[in-house]
Amino acid sequence: MTDAERRKAFNAERKAQLRRGVAIQAETYAEIVRLLELASRVIRLTLADAPSEFEQWRLEALQGEVRLAAAVFERGSLATILTGLDRSFEAGGALVTEPLRRAGIEIAGVLPSLDPRLLIAMKSFQTDRIRDISTTVVNRVNAELGQVVIGFQNPFEAVKKIAGVMDAPKARVATIVRTELGTVYSEAGQQRMEQAVKAGVDGLMKQWRRSGKLHPRLPHELADGQVVAVDQPFLVGGVKIMKPRDPSLDPKERVNCGCASLPFMKHWRVSTPGPRPYTAEEIAKSRSARQVEEIRAA
Image (cartoon, rainbow, N blue to C red):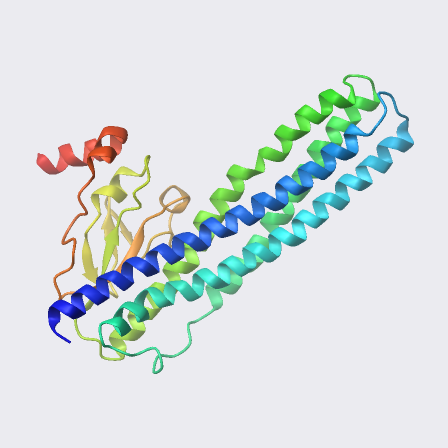
């Protein structure tokens, strides 16, 4: 295999593995939203069958059905987020080993297992967060039902408000999925790169790659293309960052960050050396992209 062939294979597989990580997040979010919408549909249909006036006993029965629907959502969502964390952790390691394998460097079989301590901690943390979402939904729905009992609104009005109550957690779910699945993805990638260097992969470094989001953090955009040694931090807006979404970072640097730390072989020319150029569409739509271009030009 020539250097050009190795470079091409490495970059193609690296891109494919990045897409895999993003797909896992999208699939996890979509499944949790599906479960949330299912719970919403059950609750709204239950309330729609209620008479315009009902006594306290009817309220208690409805509240029981709400709790049951929320419990189904909680169990399904918890299983989904835990599976997503496992898949992301495995994919983060593959981001390193698979491109190397495609380039003719087979090391997966000789590397030790990834340290699962952060993954275990993240799983425990997410259990509490999903339960909190479920509890919040139950409390807010029950508050709307209480308004029906005391005559402040009828069931039809409550149904409309409950639809909004059930939609509200979607943004929070998106943040949890993007941040925490991304965290274990970066952790596994960092571990695998460190292991690969110890295993003798000469020239392996890491490269910061911007997320491509419409409204990113400006320092994260400016760090795009930065290459450092595997055991050294990136310098992002004056902040030392070992990997995107590092748990040690201030939340303002990690929450919803979509950047990536990519394996980079200094002996091969990569397809996009240095910063990845913005497209015309990105420059037209993103103020951050225009700012970065102006700063670099200056």
